[in-house]
Image 1 (tube, rainbow, N blue to C red):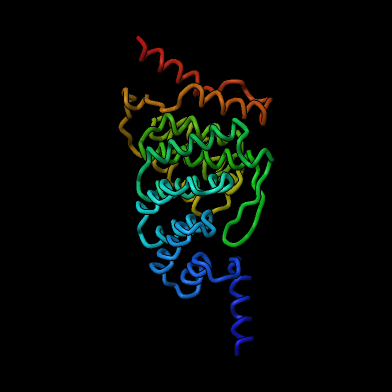
Image 2 (spheres, rainbow, N blue to C red):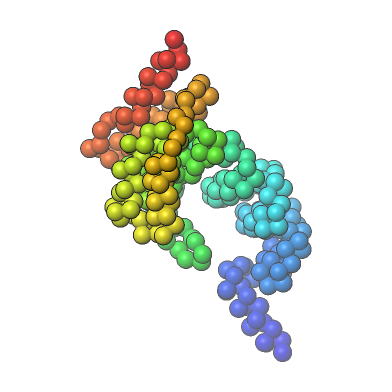
Length: 291
């Protein structure tokens, strides 16, 4: 019987990739994954953090469980308070978790600031430990992510955050950059949404048509195609023109940030136009505001 119990314990450690032993972190993982006792798991994760037992993993796993229990605000404060105890290697994944928690809690301004911080770290060469790719995991599967793909993904998330704030001009800027770096159909639909909100229908139409004609990665996704069709229908219905007032011109994108991303784009797409048309428009808007 003892041998059978030992086999079950060993199987648990192998399946869930947790270390052997009887420390608070291992017991927390058992409570989380086997017993499904999430409140008990949180108590044990706290003990692991306070006792210095696998602190990197304990803090991240505890925040994930808190999110499952609709305790996202508490998870945010836990990460902010205890990330100083974590290793340098854990900081990037903690940032990713914070971004997700900010999004869930509707804390868009903090989400935007953290996304911009991650983009700055990319153009300063501080991500992936200087390598061009990193190993990521999704739904239990490992895959390689390049710096280009990560930059485009973060820009897409930043664009969506600006859309939540109805700052469509800033969203357009970052979506255009994301599409130059690593284009896909989903971001194309979001870019088109920005242009529709800015009543620039002639620019939005060909972007949506490219999606429906299958010219972009991910264009075969039925939800994305449905979005593109609905957006084209929306443009055909009567509209009331939107006036670009002063709040709408608040790009929330400082020049240093824009220039950093431009440097990356010049490296990855050297044959492109040196300056996107949108930046000419932005310059004109800023000149008007200065008058």
